[in-house]
Amino acid sequence: MGLAQGRYGPAANGCVINNKRVRRLWRDEGLRTPTKRKKKRMVGVGTHIGAMTPIVPNALWAMDFQFDTTIDGRQVKLLNIIDAFTRECLAIVVDHSIDAERVVGTLARLAIERGRAPAFVRFDNGPEFVSHAVAEWCREAGVDSVFIDPGSPWQNAWIESFNSRLRDELLNMWQFDSLLEAQVIVEDHRIDYNNQRPHSALNQQTPAGFAANWITNQPKTA
Image 1 (spheres, helix red, strand yellow):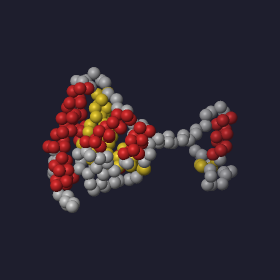
Image 2: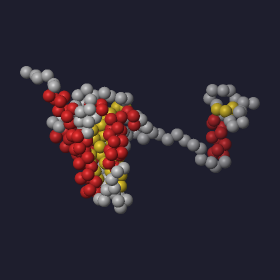
Image 3: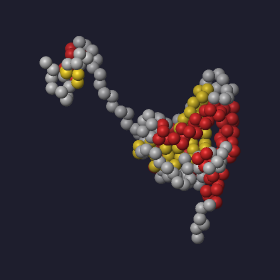
Image 4: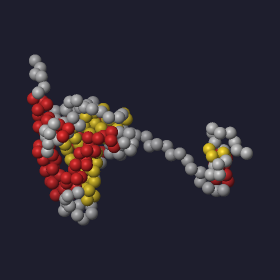
């Protein structure tokens, strides 16, 4: 006779069995019982929220990693950072490896170049992004870090769109002979993307042109 429904699940033959009893039988036979793994706790400070729609430059910088290889098979890692409002590609760091300290150094450099840090930075839950180093920089710079939900790349749609264009227009079309060649060609592509590529989301303006026009059209303050 089956046991009461609710706390117990159905067996393969349709009978209802006690889950605890099954585990006890497993242990009696010397089998390892399945256990739930604890989710890894993120080190970085921040929040998990859905889509954000920035309305000014420097409101949200989105970032992500891409990977490629040189002709000799060595890994090439790219750190892509864009301004989600202007669609400008602020930086593409290209190296064989990029750690959290390199991420922090790049963010600090961009904050100086653009006059201030962004209000938010957005990324996934990769170890380079949830590190103490990134969390400390965000805290000192007054930046809120925003994590996308695990397995939800569409929540960072701007950087995913940029990644797709970079893959189709460059990475899939070019075989890099060396890391130096990759760095030079990728930087040339970044400059061309910002200054020569009209963007449909910007009314066919280039990212750099849209950013300049936005600044020009802001009302003058006394």
